Length: 287
Length: 177
Image (cartoon, rainbow over all chains, first blue to last red; front, side, top):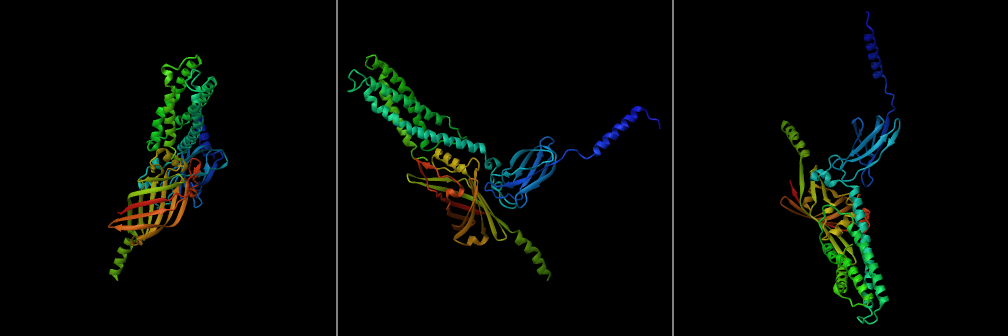
């Protein structure tokens, strides 16, 4: 029975490996439990819950009990994906990191329809998960859109005050050469100042509408179409009016009669104001 | 005796296995919102529904995507979608159970379990008019919903909030399969 050293070394190695394989795992396993509820807070009974080890890909499944509770034991520590899949509703997934020896809790709230076994589900009606899946991001987009449009609405109403005031004092800005009784340099200053405030508020108002999140798949219908169409009139008008006003201001300050393109300042302002007023009226029936 | 036994063997399982279904053919669902300055009706024809009858009881499920309601103003509809948390909870579902013999009545009263805006609310004994024509049944009624039932803050127009009531008129035509 003389064996060479190589054979003895291999046999010893195999023995070590065998013992190592037979030895119990030294890692302390973790436990995960929690409750699955529907949006109203009621327990989601008989709901399938699975845990997937993200490193090994190994998956385990269980079902919630009458209280909506689930539990997994003997899970190796690591990162896991936990999914609650109620019948006929949208699965809810969350990630959790399990620490060795720890008993961790993860509660899940599932949106969408909940059906007990045997009950009709949204799937039975032909709705796809894409149609029935709620999205927190989509809701956040809707919330942001509404918030920005509310500010747009309020600022738009506030802008009417300096806008009207600018129009009211316009007569006093026509200059010292008899174009309007009582017109003078201070009248022009006041008109220009109010016009600047109006333009500043207008741009701020417009930006809240322009940069409000767009909701995909929405067709514009109803009074908002007129509101948007009128923006193509008062928008350019609100840019052109101050430019023409600056030209007219300069000409008047030089003692000249307003001439050339600057003569359009008044008419452009009136058209802009009319379109702006109509735009407000067009949506005044909305909430 | 053998004949009786044979009859029992064949008829009893047949009775328990008896299952009929109803499918929603057409529907008009319309919510109504009231404001001192304005009245709004949002209408959807996109509901789908099914009823399964077994052992003398019929279980129905009707569902409609929130975003399919059209009030004639896309801006208002998006605002309604937002206040009703339609991004997070895109479906309205209604479940109810009726005895199979309810088809013989002209008015039925149903307990409706409505899931909307992340809330589940039960409306007891809601009356519906029932008209049967051949294998079709027309069911019409109004669900006396309130915004507060679903924790929806009433939207406002010019600083004035709408009324809390949001009755939903339901007109459906079902077909027995």
